[in-house]
Every structure is written in C-alpha cells, then in structure tokens.
Length: 329
Image 1 (spheres, rainbow, N blue to C red):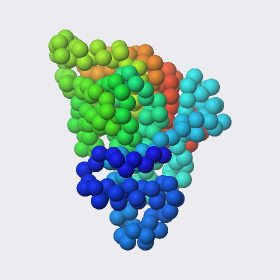
Image 2 (image 1 turned 90 degrees about the horizontal axis):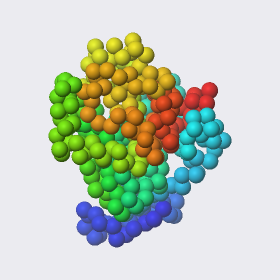
Image 3 (image 1 turned 180 degrees about the vertical axis):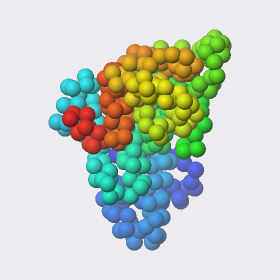
Image 4 (image 1 turned 45 degrees about the vertical axis):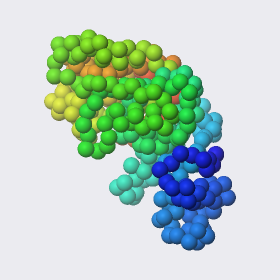
C-alpha cells in the first residue's frame, strides 16, 4: 500500500490532508474506524466516507500481490483442470447462505469485482491494448479500479452501446478504467445490436467504425464477464435480445452470454441472424487475445462460467470460493 499525500484531488489542501491522515491511520496504523473517529473528532460514518474518498481520489493506492489469491491448492486445481494461467479467489461463502439479506448477492459480486480490478491492475504493463466488456461485474470492477498511471496504455470498448436502468452504459466502464490508469480511451460508436444484418454490414464498412473494430485484433489483454441465460438474464433486460429470441436460444441449448453472443455448454457460439447483427468483439477474436481475464462469481453463473472455460475464452479467472468449489466438483 502506498500513501500519496500529493495526489491531485478536488479537495482543498486542508481537506486533502485530513483524508491522508485518516488513510494512514486506517491502512498503515491499523486503527478501527471508531478509534479514528474518536481521535479526529468526527462521526464514524464520516470516517467511512473519508476512507472511500481517499481511495477514489488516489490518495491511497491499494495493490495486491496476485499470488496471494492464486496460490491456494484450489486455485492450482482449477488451473490444471481448465488450462488457466492464474485463478484469483475471493471469499464469499459467508455472504451467500440461504438466510442472508437480499443484497448479499450484490455484496458478493462487488467482492469479486474488487479483486478483479486489483488483479487486472497488477497485470497491466506499458504498451498494453486493453479491451473492456460490459455487465454488472465489470461495472463494479471499473468503480474499484486502483489509480495507477500506466504509460502508453490503450483501453477499448468491446461491445456497442445499450441502455440499462440497473447501471451505466458500456462506454462508462471503459472510460472509468481509462481514467484510473491514464490510458487512451477508445469507445465504440455503435449500438450493441442493429435491426438487420444488412444494416450491421453497412455500419461495419463505415471508415470510423471499421477502424475501431480493427483494434480488436491488436488487443493484448481483455477484461470481461459472462451472463447466464436464466429468466433474469441481462441480455434481455438490456434490450440486446428479445424474449422470443432468448427462448429460441434456450431451446438451442444456450447456457451463457459472452459479449452478446449465446454459447452452448461446450462454449461454442450459436451463430445465426442474431449474432450477425451484434456490434462488438466476436468470441473468436476474444480467444485470440493473449491475456483474457474472466471475472464472475455466484452460483447463478455456474453454467455460464463453465461454458466459457470450456470454450477456452479465458486465461485468467477471478471468482469466489463458492463458484470455485462447484467448478472443481
């Protein structure tokens, strides 16, 4: 952990000093939030906000050693079974019991996303071309991305735009990660899906979009999640697929949604008119990217994650202990 009292923030110098002091007491000296509140003379909720603001403003930079999460026997078993290079496992079993509160799934997802953000930051190097996908987990990970400037980094949006009432658009996550890393941001100027194959082909031939899509062949790393095909699947909620299309793909054996594309249990893309209308990276292009980090947890995504691993779309996996145990079983 690095405390940086000279970080550029939106706060006045005295406020910045307070954030730095609280961050040092909390992260370096190990005081509890209640102890800090008593020492500083403010309420505990204020200290909670100070700690959060210190992270968001880059005053405190938390880094992880990936091997701390990838060194367990369970991680090694998963690497061996699925041909992965590294597996990072967040401890979520205590948040996913039947008696847990309704928001426990969100808490668990955020833990996996936070670990994914830190693991990704640990892997990025100068000159990387990073592709960023979309989804709830990616959205949370973008919020948790550490402030770390990486020279000559490019960050690309992997799937076209769409609307969701649940969280931000795909370009928002890409932009946030680019801002946190100092990378050059390249968004995708297209809807995620078009109304006809002909229109999709025409749009792909437009010079600006053609250049943006060509960047997918230059990716060195990709950061993505995967969706399930259950009744609450985001591919329907976001408007990419209609309920009728979802039902058709379910009958065809779809178990996962990867960058808008439906996959069967073996990880094969269920091609057709629908997939030709999608605007974004194709799973085959994703598979050609040297480093591919899949971030997903929760038993509701078990079949989807297994299909993604079966299709060899990931080289690195960030998940939780509940999912990890099921993937081994």
